[in-house]
Length: 172
Image 1 (tube, rainbow, N blue to C red):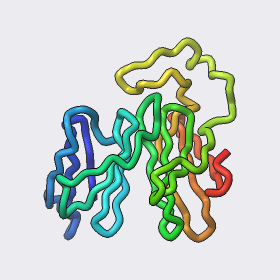
Image 2: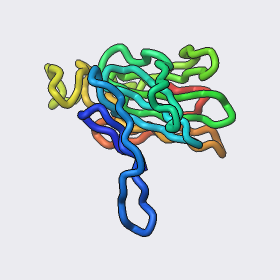
Image 3: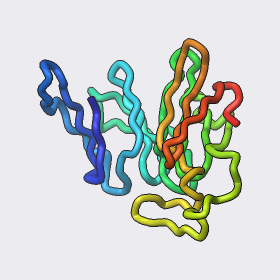
């Protein structure tokens, strides 16, 4: 299990035997903190509050590379990898879902979290708070992504808890 927080650290925990024990702590840095994490075979992707996506191998955590600056308003909350497709999908508070070609380090597809342009009554006039950097209403802010490799579907949840299903080839 991997956890990240405001202290700018990722903590890798062992959950064997029902007990939690810290295996490793990795410093991410002081400039932003982790909001989204994906892990496969020692490779770690981390979406930060400032919209940056970092990658590194857990065995060489000091060798962090910026994959790209993905979201320009608000933080990266959703992050998932499409194994075999060489794609990474991210989402955030900027009402965007981005499909990124891993090798080209380039956004190749884009969709939006919510098609509903009308803010709900409680969203009207909302300004950013400590919980978000975004001016978008909460129903247009993503909180999580999940990828199903069997059919190429991506589940997208928003800040209200609603979930929509998209195909990787059409993120809208």
